[in-house]
Image (cartoon, rainbow, N blue to C red; front, side, top):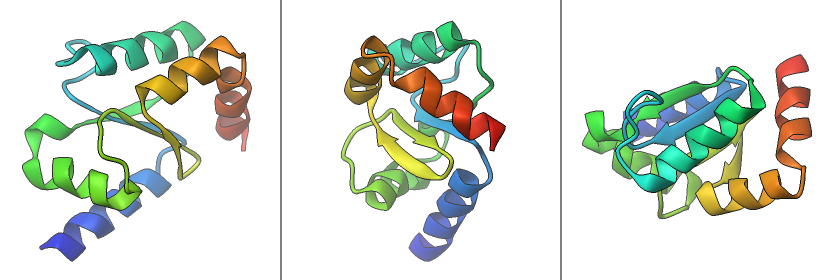
Length: 107
């Protein structure tokens, strides 16, 4: 079971240019960190996909093992783990996030 969860996560990460594992969904985030992350990505005006970890406990636990990162949300760009809400906020405030995301979407 764990291997199939990891394979599913890996496939999802690799098949989406910008992917956010979050609690809830963009319309109804279920934690402040997920809400803050969605607000940043919405402000960029770029397409992104989300996975609601609250819908599946195996995914919620599995994504933490996949990234070796203990918290959610988790942001992936071009198949690469970027970080959580704090890192995304920092990158956004320094002007580093938007060029990274736009380059991924153009690739």
